[in-house]
Length: 394
Image (tube, rainbow, N blue to C red; front, top):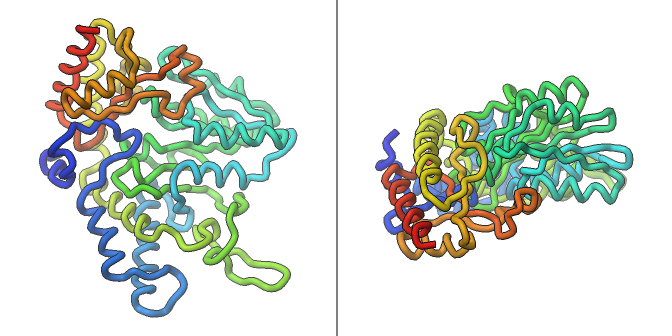
């Protein structure tokens, strides 16, 4: 993997070290060009016209669905474009018709986006069960066997934690869900950008991820559903129907059924181009590159006196998301120091995961360094050097 060539597609990296990709990844030039090409050369609505611009826009937009579906081992008619993972999860949570007497099981390591939509259902009589992680942020499959009962309809779990970077045992959880007739939703916002994903191999019923964490534009997300027909559309309007009479309507088939109104066409096309970029580099190559950097950053942080690292220290059990704190210092202050001293961008705070922070007693949250294909060993060395200097004088 030619990291220097990759970095040439990200001019912003000329001035900074970016270690906040778990929040939003950077966007390479080919993706930007694809978005501008839409607006400059065939700016028209999709699925609504016979003129050449509309036909070309529709072709490109449908092709983006095909690319994204192939990226996760799915069929394009099963992939719905949303504005982000949050919207995708809400579509499922609101569209399954859950009510009194039903139960949903989730975990304490979830991003708020995969926690609050299910918590909201409590006002409709839905019971919410929460599985706790071990001290290293990992789960045993047996934890879910004990949590499920005959009222459980859905298990909603993250594939990889946005705080601890730990990877959940999705295949084992899937087996348990299938044995008990329970639907499985997997939040892949942190996994899809960094590892090879095949939804059929995972065995889930819903898989969700965001474009802006995988080199795509903001305002793009993906919902894959094994059976989209089980979801009642949250939005009704243009583009999602086959026929309408004064009394009733017939919904469209495939992804259009859940994509009411004019979609983010340029964003969808840009997301398709981001998939092209990632597949051109190779997901295995990206994963191996990040694993080397993750081991280096973990080993380095553990050796710095006064630094506490959270989650598993085994790179095999995690992605390149590393949360830590410097003793006696507020994480926001340390993040500012890293920026001001060396132009290093990291995240600080609760990372939209307040229940987990409370569980670990981390009132101010943590610092989080998150890596991607454009990061280098030299950047990790400089990051560790500056953290050591900050901890030394703390």
